[in-house]
Length: 234
Image (cartoon, rainbow, N blue to C red; front, side, top):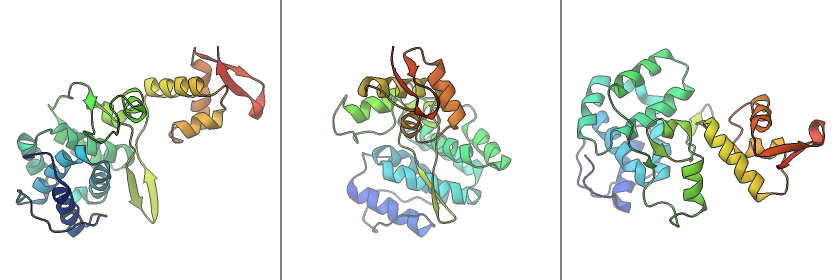
């Protein structure tokens, strides 16, 4: 489906197309080499393109969160066969199903992704990190969100859902990713607090779970007691 690396004009056109369907985006009707005949084809193309633009990825996740019932699951699944990387669409529905409590969303996701295998481990976003092996790329590799990792991808950019006037970040870190975040905090600071760790993991788990993470990490040890306690390398 994706014929080439999307240009700025192609991305602008995709933003425009999604805005016409209720997406929170602004673009222009630039020329592009595509003519999607359905919403299923458009969202498949957008998913393929999302690997080249984190902002587009966020728009697609947000649109899917609000409009998934407008998609025909059979046609969407058939369209996976024409996608450059069908796992991208699985990632998007993984994020949506992680926040939606409707069991129908989970059933939709399971049907859509049935039989599809994760990719060999690789970065989700292509040509977006300023430096190869720089800090942003390293953190994507070492601290990926679980929703990406489930499908073999490495990325830590949390999409935002617009819901009832609020922006809700979506996505969770695996235990291994959280341990790597602890290691990064311990290596970069003489000491750090529970609050520092909660901020480092974007408040994605409870305070009690965060405390358990710190207690169970073999790299660090506590100093002090109560709310004034902090953690240092052993």
